[in-house]
Length: 119
Image 1: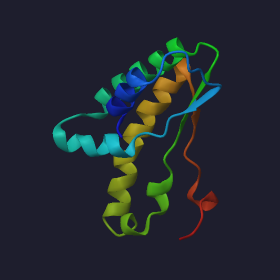
Image 2 (image 1 turned 180 degrees about the horizontal axis):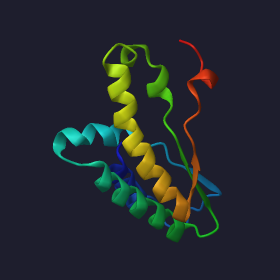
Image 3 (image 1 turned 120 degrees about the horizontal axis):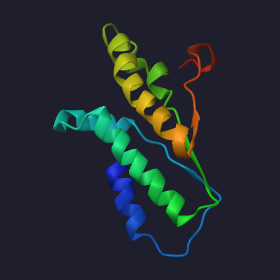
Image 4 (image 1 turned 180 degrees about the vertical axis):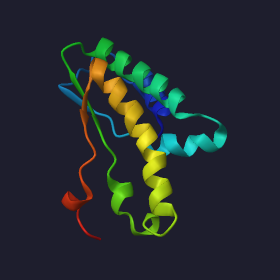
């Protein structure tokens, strides 16, 4: 699901169900939406709205927006020229995620490739 679909799921969820921590894995499916004309700036707005809605649903809950390091070690994406394009492409989404996290969530930065498993 992309961030817009996650927001719809949140709106349909039962009222009164709280949480201690919400871990929102996002960015990969949102990146695919660029083919439909949805830019990283729209991802930022959608993610910001989702975080606000989560905060309203559970003011004491913590929100975590982890990075998506999988693209750094996926074998299919390590072939030239993809390895350079993929890093550039996903870094735009990670930057937007980091900007949203500054105001309302925790962001787990992208680890160095030396700390990622070798596939």
